View 1 (cartoon, rainbow, N blue to C red):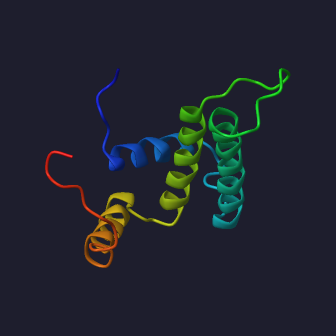
View 2: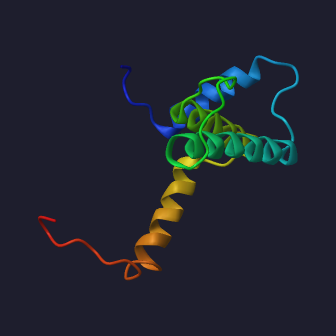
Length: 112
């Protein structure tokens, strides 16, 4: 298995990949459509594995991991196209959860 990558490394890798094509990044609206499509594919796989809808014998085998990867790729593309640092976005959201929502959930006691 390869070494863990930082979010910045992942954003740089995706940017290097996309930058080799004349078309570049899709428009933000097109990427939202792609996100919706990829989320639907992820939902379908989760439903096959954990829900009540078994996969048809004619359907290709895909993994939840692969579908999450597809979703992550499009999120990174959207962030890159809008010049958003996802590490900063993550830090902002985590700070919000740790302040606004810090008493929202029942915390485990030590040892639980």
